[in-house]
Image (cartoon, rainbow, N blue to C red; front, top):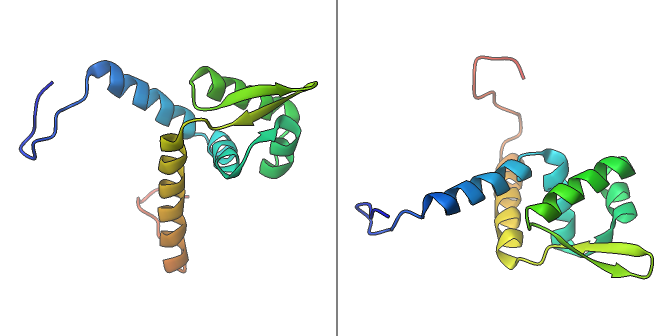
Length: 119
């Protein structure tokens, strides 16, 4: 691990790979919406599908990926699985990022293209 000029130590390669994988999973708008919804409170797959506007099988597949990555957990309540985000840091990261982008969007009346390519 090397320290930069600011005195911060670079994290190990394994940690960077794990963070990149988590961000990769959250790069899907559907999965990000699911994590955002679960950051507000726990839900079963049916409630999540209704909230995020996704088909039940698709939301279930997204939840499986998020569970395997350790970003969400589930517990059984009778016959249903209730999903939740069990990591307050993940909740914080998602809330800060979405909150900042929402505030930026609220301040910018029209979408500004950042590249010369079509939207």
